[in-house]
Length: 394
Ligand code: SF4
Ligand code: SF4
Image (cartoon, rainbow, N blue to C red; front, side, top):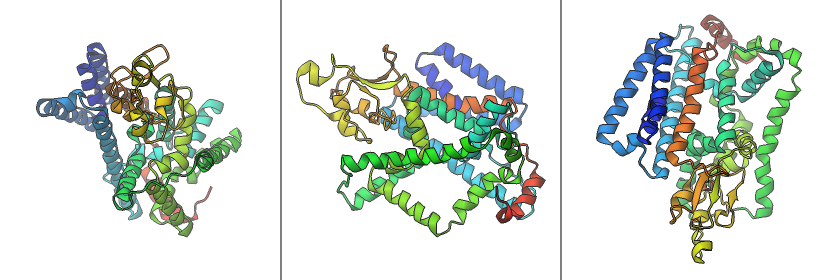
């Protein structure tokens, strides 16, 4: 659906050759897979996009306010992740009951195994070993990192379901307690560094594992059921885990994007990658009301959920910028604010949606067709291991 939507957006934004090339590529990929659910899904997606174009043309064509487009993308991706969660739960419950699952394991769930993904990327880089147990973990880590390198923390602002859940929690809190309790700058900075400390901890686990131990780890039972261990961690939380959850939820409710800003190690990784991104929010002083008309304006700053003083900067370099484009949307002057490269290549909300969708879905599709996506662990092995989940350690 996401890839079909990207083709539609490309077509309606005038990139007809791009739309044709992407359409042919995606269709050829689906047909060459000879996997009928993929072909059927593509056909259904094409019909749905066609119907949407008939009844809600502005949605199919992406001719919407950037805030609406972003929220639509966020909600659809969150819904997909919810379905993935249900599919994973059903598959695991059947395994636990000793029944061969009629619903396959959703490999994309391996995206929640960043340490495994990091170890697998290290194995590829240092040993040339391509793990076949959770290959999707490496693919998704690579994809998310790539989004950061190309378009800042757009993954956080446009795709992450946790970010969206945090937004709802914050809005709920604001209904009952209107006041903003922002920490002073001297406290905000060390709190922001917390996520980098957590990232450092995760990186330490990956880097400190000697290369020669990696094959042993990748062929071990712990790695084979790392996804089930992760699920068990969330389903049967201990007291410490519950306290951590409570802290995370309170942070998200306390300040907007509190979890992304202070705790999330993925956010930290993307924040670091975002420094290299060629696309940044840039303010054009020839058009901005402040310099061009001598007026006082800070609409962009007031719209920014990350509290970045956009109206005082020429280029927003902050690692907290999620490329959400709320500032661009709030700006009363058309040409004053853009997500663009240094030499003036602009990325509209529609362009960002297309780029993100292609990165998030085309690379996994290519990985799938190349045989580096589906776990090769036999169902019988998982069924056996899930019965001994608690006794398996690393
Ligand atoms: S600077 Fe603009 S794009 Fe970046 S987080 Fe703030 S509102 Fe979003
Ligand atoms: S909202 Fe637009 S016009 Fe106003 S300060 Fe920001 S960039 Fe300038």
